[in-house]
Length: 93
Image (tube, rainbow, N blue to C red; front, side, top):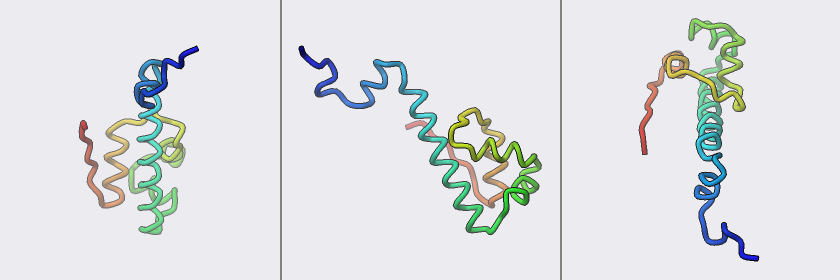
């Protein structure tokens, strides 16, 4: 029995299984969440203080920081970046 995935890349496998977009979105969200959390620690911002700076609720910030929740808007990411004194950069690669 020949393995059809032998020699193919992991991206090819995910594409064939229809999981690539979902997997990449989850990975990107984990990286963004990590970066926001590290910047909050560096700035010594609590979640409540960060939510206040973003002009949002603590529960909305919790959703943003939840790596499993990939449903976030660019507006929310921009508010988080600005609250941390950063700029949001998004590019296609």
